[in-house]
Image 1 (tube, rainbow, N blue to C red):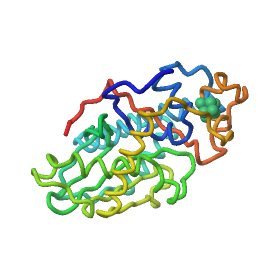
Image 2 (cartoon, rainbow, N blue to C red):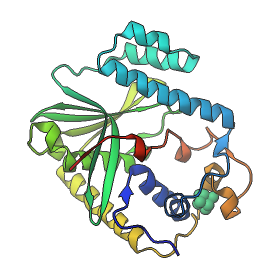
Image 3 (cartoon, protein in one colour):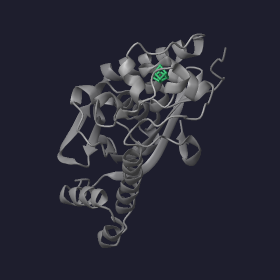
Length: 270
Ligand code: SF4
């Protein structure tokens, strides 16, 4: 029996893993097993898209810190990257007057644990608005209802309220000042925008504490009943849930993006 270590740091990825399949959480975060199987097919195509997604994030970050567009355009060297970069340039962000924080990590205590998130961009007009941008390179645009229910949407907004005071001139960020925007590189004119309210924040934070407490007290991490998820899971062989990877564009529930690497990020702790 493996229990959650004291002071464990949760992220939206680990919480989403638990929500999707408690056994996946156990294998990945408690037993720390390597990923023995390809998550989705075609494997090379999926891996290439993930690498391009990471490069695209880097291009935008460099643009936002002031590196000239013409220099960055030369770095967009594949068809996907060129298309995403042109889409980004054709839909400029209107952030005059905002302080911009790129690739920023925030963390805060979550009951006896910590919660951490890395943001692509937080744009703040102190005392007015706090915008969270997240770039997505999904091959298909997910439904807004699906994105609204993702733990990322709940974690990122709640954690900014909880831990963002220093970004707001020392004043607390109010939930109603927060908006989260998913910008889809292949659907540049159709971002998903999620405003926030005090009631949602209270509900989200209480829900996150409850989820952390549930994980901490668990002795049993059962496999998901939704076996469709297993086709996209690297741990299929541990669970005897088939030997064939799913097709990466088969279902919305397993749209993939680069993993958060907790060791590579610099954190602003609350
Ligand atoms: S293969 Fe299925 S049951 Fe096993 S960890 Fe993955 S999602 Fe869970």
